[in-house]
Length: 343
Ligand code: PEP
Ligand code: MN
Image (cartoon, rainbow, N blue to C red; front, side):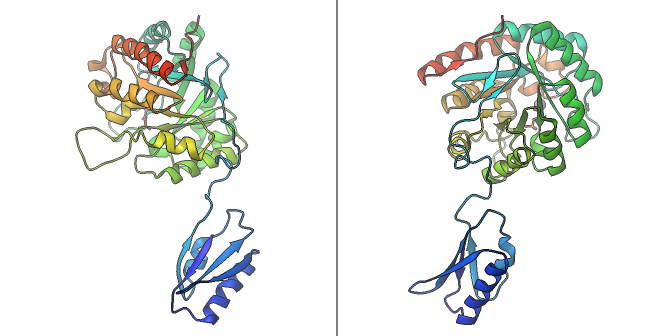
């Protein structure tokens, strides 16, 4: 961290900054320049409170020179993290893993039916919310525990791994009892008690980027899970808010290579929430794979017009089948492959 002093800062003010840095337990090195002095902090372990220095007399700005996150960074671990599931699916290796399913689990027959279809089409992980974070409290909130049980039954019948969202810390324990992956949604990306509890479940965590989160905030959220001793985090770009109204969100495809350069964690993309519009999901799914995503999470519903949530962005099963065929070709072009279908 570098503390840049104002050009009018006095020698006493520089001395005071040096004193505070030393009080914090670090070495301070004043670097006199032509116009102003900067004070470098040596031995910074990432835990410095910049606010304390920012408020001192004569300080112009405090500039971080290292990332505030540690364990998620490539500096901490150079090689890619591979998150492996019991059914053989892995995220972060050379294969591209595909998660598919309805936004929400709506009934036992519906989830079992779509699970069988998705397995045939080559998905290896089934999604379906049992606890839904709906924008309106009057919208369908999910089937809760019953929904988790239906998902577990779908896994039993198909071999698909299952992922479901947890909305609160107690929910994380419950979801972890049933699911192979605990999802933390965009609205909860900075829910720190939830992140910690999900981390402590020991189950892989699928962390979706908040709709207004910077990449740094996203990686710091993942850091909470790793800080609990859980290295199995799958990051997911799901679109960010924009000024344009033609899509529900703007799928930030550049975030894929950016995150992969900064972090060793696998990074997947959600073209469903990323666009909000069925006719655009396939194009963005293809693009995400081309951009280097380690996987996709796609909403697919047996009868989208009757879906209880996110029907407008849910693919029909045959559209999903085409997407699977297309991304195999794209994967090949970049020396990757799509996870082999379950037998
Ligand atoms: C979802 O996956 O259904 C969901 C609610 O996603 P997000 O948190 O990205 O909005
Ligand atoms: Mn949804």
